[in-house]
Image 1 (cartoon, helix red, strand yellow):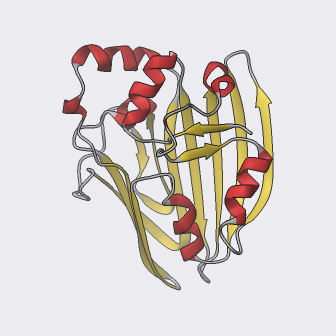
Image 2: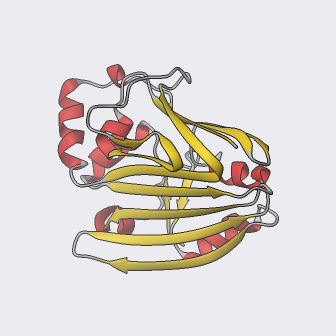
Image 3: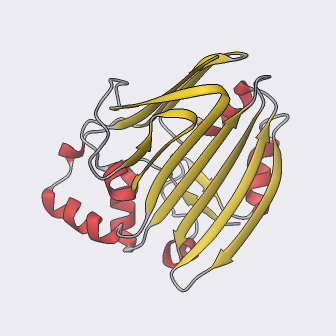
Length: 221
């Protein structure tokens, strides 16, 4: 059984520094008018980190299920969810895992995502609604400059991205960890309105953003 403890949380920085290895994450959420959804996730996990597997003493941390069997066990606890596809491949640096998961309603999507990020809420009414996600809520000021510089080097080449589409045109607001709107980080690429909105930034900046990081999606016909 392969599991990596934690996902897109501030403690990931210290964890990765200890291993001198990193992880990248891409999430695409497609929400349908009836509340069903499709989540596509791609993990880029350094081979060193993958081979370490589950770390002793971190049982309180959320898990990233890596094998098909591990992911299916996770979904078995969420009634109605379905693993639509799973694949993995290797490069000289990384294990790349691509998964597509389908959910019958917003409650099941929230159940899955809430085990991996700080806080999520969805209000949905056909062609309108809002989807709020706090990715992490800790300030980067808690880390020393030496630690951040080492993390910056370790995370080089690994990105975090999230994209969202709904039955109507959407807007995305980037927030801090308290849900307050902030400017788009200078290193980020963002599409803030349209049929599909998105945010991409390197993993270091997503974790060490001042005062945390979140996104709010709104859509209306």
